[in-house]
Length: 356
Image 1: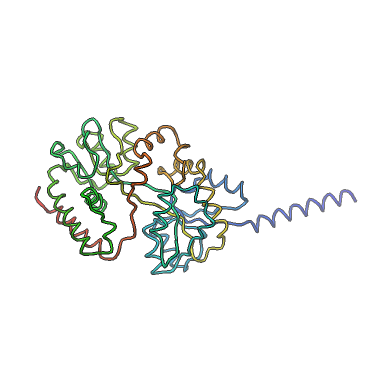
Image 2 (image 1 turned 180 degrees about the horizontal axis):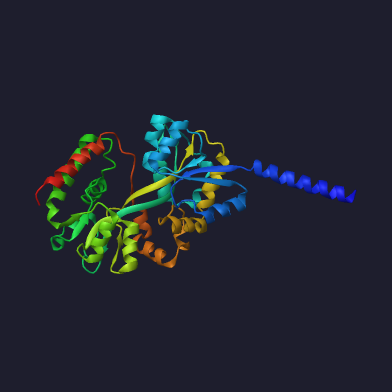
């Protein structure tokens, strides 16, 4: 009898374990590469008992997948903040965030407020911030000491020694450095056109300073490494990469503000594991966990204090480039209204065609 009882107990325990596995909650995460590293997934699963199913994606693919299913198939997505409201207006694929379920104290407040504003639709908030990055200035501080803002790239002493892209971030950055607020003018086409005209003139006047309009990241890095370019408009991680090779070169947050992108957390409309989604958000925003994501993705997160736990070199580079005031001064990209990119394209074409 004892043997039979022991055997039946083992069978029952095994059955219960199998049942638990079959019914274990799963969080289906639609995200970017590096945003859910395996060590973070393993830690979350161990602490919560919730399984995480990761699908790597990008903005276009996220919209396509959720549009095809009308917001089903995933429990948490990570679109960029400027890609949410238009997709929601067109396809109704997301549901509002319940901010009472977010631990706001774990977020850098300026980023949280900016994202709430930029993902607001019909009076509801549809996203909170996660991973972010910026474009600003990459400067050889020995050879281009006076470059502190975008328009400083036009200093006569730097003739033939600067580089930037002929893309919309350059228009936006120069507009801010010229004392304008292009994002505030998004809703006023006439005003935006006037700002673009001012920027166009400045960029044409600045053409003699341009060694090359870079189009690929490796191209720009090599121009800085060779010394052909002393200062450029580029992205933060590129500046820190160069700084690891040459301490004279680093990323500088411009006086008028670095230009920032944020990849968010957003809830697909037909999420089946909403509570698990909120648990994941609050879990990964813990500073120690956020640092692991920074190491994997190469970009910092909106976790307050997360920079303290990254490797010492990257931490020092970040703190040098981004004192708290410069973080708060970042200009976050809002959604682009229809028609503006066409206006910008015409300006960029005229700048390209102009004689230096």
